[in-house]
Length: 383
Image 1: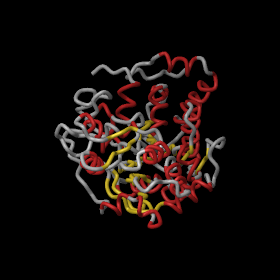
Image 2: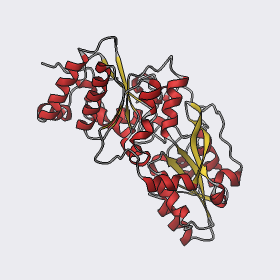
Image 3: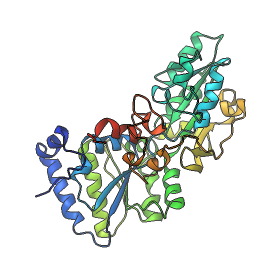
Image 4: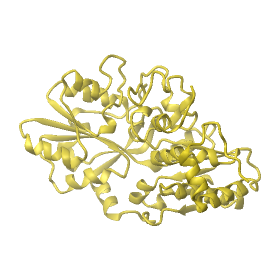
């Protein structure tokens, strides 16, 4: 019989998942059985890259179902969390001048580097700046078309999943002249390689749960380098609790057999080659650059700006913006260590004290994909 860990509490959702779902119960039992037969590991660390995977693991209490030897850690899978603060500083300045800043809701409260009263676009708007929340790039295009006498700048935040939505409209030549794009887009495979190279002494990974939505675009083959070059098993996973449990099981099986490989658990959505049309759009509209990841560093070939063909809409070229190493000035905030999987949100002294979902102090508490916000909203903690 499996004894569930009670350190964070077992709520109704966990009981429902475990007691009323025979398949979940069987997989959890097999995980415990496998974990007891893997030799050579005192502790097995499995990183989930995607913020949605972290939500599933936390919301359904999957950590509570794991053997003591298995540690599930979150990675840099929240695009808002790793977006440089100096982008926000620049946009705040612009919003008080001649431009209207258009942003997604999850980047609206993203803090810049200032500790003054105006730390985010949300604060800037409350002080009279021109900032509007949009739901898509098409929404931004529509606003610019309807107000041709105004200047707009779209804050494009995201990974490969959202890159094609901006790229297609640019590719079709449907973006009006009064709208420019500040691309904070980031590619995900390079950051995993960077972590394994630059933080090999601090971050020891025995398995990776690769992001399903991103992989639907880039393809499962994009992660082949993990087992081939680093001997790290990887599973491309869906987002249901069963998907995540199966992914953990597959990783443990590869560890037991000493045969690290790539498994596409999310075959109902992800193809080995990905979405060829979306990949074509990304390749034609964007130029790959070395890019800064907040709290991590400058990562080779991990960023995307608009290519020269679309330079009239590229904020990087228009305003002379450059990617660089930057010290984000948020004293006490441990978000950088959280996104690297070095600490848990509860180990940050500001967590649910000076930093809450209602009043986020650090970037990891802003987005619904941020690890700190996920923990704040889904774990019954006694602090």
